[in-house]
Image 1 (cartoon, rainbow, N blue to C red):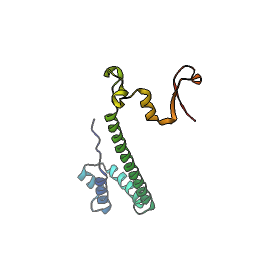
Image 2 (cartoon, rainbow, N blue to C red; image 1 turned 180 degrees about the vertical axis):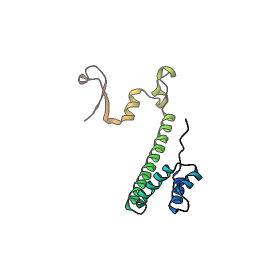
Image 3 (cartoon, rainbow, N blue to C red; image 1 turned 90 degrees about the vertical axis):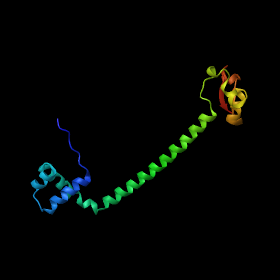
Image 4 (tube, helix red, strand yellow; image 1 turned 90 degrees about the horizontal axis):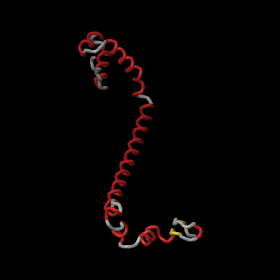
Length: 145
């Protein structure tokens, strides 16, 4: 099977403009570029059908949409950079190993304190670990009022 040829928009435009000049017949131009005359006729029809879009408002709307997509892409790239920086920072300060592997408790390696004091300093004074009757014998965090 033969591989299909893909032609660029610039090439199609060049060939169609040559057809529109009518210096040569469609068959001569098709032979020159080794393209089917039927395909040239389709390209010509599509070109003439969309020629009004060049000067119309549709192109301005498309330009506006393109600009908004570019701005959105810039924002997303900036966000990705910021998040990458944050992840790298967290990897440096937060060991990614399990307590069983390190031989000591991971929070003591970072803070030098027990888990409850590290948790309190992280969450502040608004969150506490409860073991009273309201927790029914298991530990949970609750908001203090």
